[in-house]
Length: 490
Ligand SMILES: *[C@@H]1O[C@H](CO)[C@@H](O)[C@H](O)[C@H]1NC(C)=O
Ligand SMILES: *[C@@H]1O[C@H](CO)[C@@H](O)[C@H](O)[C@H]1NC(C)=O
Ligand SMILES: *[C@@H]1O[C@H](CO)[C@@H](O)[C@H](O)[C@H]1NC(C)=O
Image 1 (tube, helix red, strand yellow):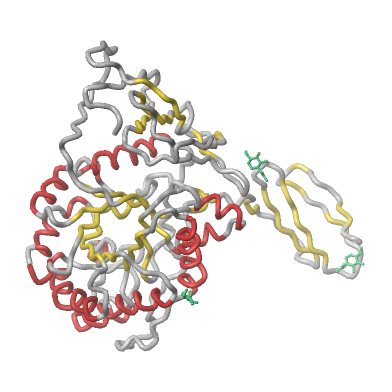
Image 2 (cartoon, rainbow, N blue to C red; image 1 turned 45 degrees about the horizontal axis):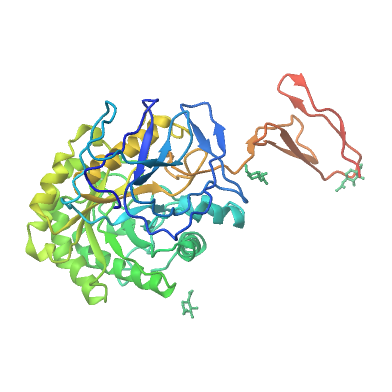
């Protein structure tokens, strides 16, 4: 940091919704600053707007040069204002009067946790959405995100278009039929490699399973109330090793693992999407007796293992059970946390957990909006959703959380795809453009049609004529006669 701590920056805030990001930290600039590319706003009819990117343009921030001594850089975004607008300001001098303001005292001598970073999940659906774009648009989406954490689903999750695991052959406890799936080979791996190639820093990848193969479970299903059968504890631990081996064969190395995504879901009767139930005691036993030793024997003793991967409500009780056992604790490095229902549980449980287990990091591993049954799935340009994210991140990091990983890196405009119809919001939405419309004919014949509404509001109707005779076609828009009489002849 350049300024001395006695200096202060006073910022006028004309709008209560001003969202400030003050770049006081030391940035390793290149000595010059490339021009930032501004947001191309699009009104979506919600509380704020979205920034539109296409194949040739995306708003981009360049790493700024360190401001001169006595000056600071301010990036600000506002509901009705700009996005990451950069201004250079001067610190008020020592003892200089500053206007009445909300005061914060920054103590540069009190250091807390070391941050691990930020990221999002390369789910099957995120990869599918990204690959649906043109190559140039994919680059625009992945470039400049500066995420250094990435989560992958190990086997299918709800953000997949089908249910599957890597060993769906019942009874194959030797894992002879274990195989990476098209979702890995054709979707996630290519996208991860593109992101890695474009990133200036290494991306720490971690994998989370949603469910074991149904035949390993008490309910023989991918979802619903079901747990791992005890005789499957060892095959399920070896499944993790095979997953790491098979990804390594594709040149993808994992930094970490979570033992199970949301282990309590599989104790909820009728739970609607991919899950498997664990109590903290069951997870303790399995980590100590099976997963930890299997990873070590498989050559993955240095892969970071995170427990819990669930909500604040489990703190500090879950880590107390698992980390309270030295046999299990020796294999664990971190506690993974989801944000759902954060408003009902005080962040003090995070501090309490940190104080009980200061040697174990806490990492936010999942968050999204639009998940509640009464919530709208996708609200592009929602300022309230931005505020909720920003506030949760700020509260979490001030309570010892070392980083925050968003849920799907990108979703489509409906918040999917999701086989269980558990559609949610995402920070990046892929607008594939046209929306298909219903078009029907009372006489199913040799002429077929498909219709679309384009993003610019125009309509496209595609006709196919398989008839040998000349056909006249009439397209009628619901009631009103609209486009008329197209001669399909050549
Ligand atoms: C992409 O976006 C830029 C900036 O809005 C615009 O100038 C350009 O025409 C767009 N390109 C296409 C193909 O729409
Ligand atoms: C992995 O990397 C090696 C060495 O660069 C290369 O020869 C091999 O083809 C790669 N394998 C895959 C599946 O990408
Ligand atoms: C389409 O319509 C024309 C008549 O205009 C006809 O001659 C032709 O064979 C039809 N079918 C195809 C496949 O072109």
